[in-house]
Picture 1 (cartoon, helix red, strand yellow):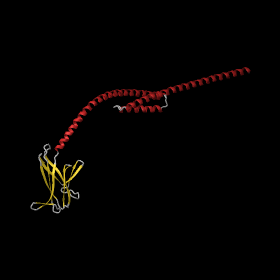
Picture 2 (cartoon, one colour):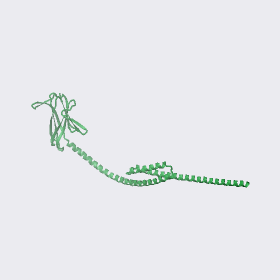
Picture 3 (cartoon, helix red, strand yellow):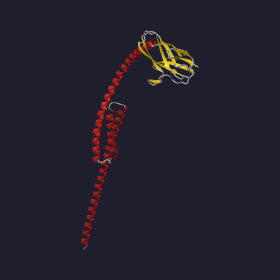
Picture 4 (cartoon, one colour):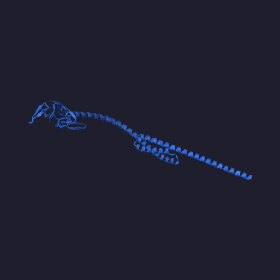
Length: 293
């Protein structure tokens, strides 16, 4: 009986020892799994940081290249947008092996594309530097040529202005009188407004040998004491300016002194001061005044 009891206790102890060994083995295995998982996580996080660092460097390079205003700015902006999108995706990721493998592949492709673009930017910068030197040299030559040209232009302008002034026609001896027109055609001078029905206007165009010959038109403006324009009262526009005139006096000019005489019919005019202006287009070339009682 005692012998059986001893055998039973020995078996129980053996089972306990076996279970303890199995438990220790399980704990050791779990510890190893945990350690391996932490090691893998640490490696993956390191890879994530490395990918982000590489993408940040690419983004900075692209931003600097875009700021230099090269002809490739549009391509560089598109590439930078791709880099920034991938950076955002990587930062949001949990850092698992599948995601990091995908992002590492995309980052490598992007970095290769960025490197090619940066090489092209470098070539463009060198070309621009060379062109800048050539442009500066050309600018010096052009500046010297421009100075000479400006001097000649100023001389020609002065000469043209001198010729223009010399070729202007001079209007002189502007005279005006009021008359009473008889039925017989005879005209009788008067200084009474109530009797006047015709205003006689005459002026001279002086001789000018360098002026252009041909038909010349002068706009005659007669204004009464109440600032009313007499006669046709038509308006002519000259650019932004306009002129209301009484009639147009046209004369054939042949570079010799010529007298221009015109009659302006009036009716029911009042006493007071009258003003007569002669315009060559919109330029006032002569004026006078007279008074009727």
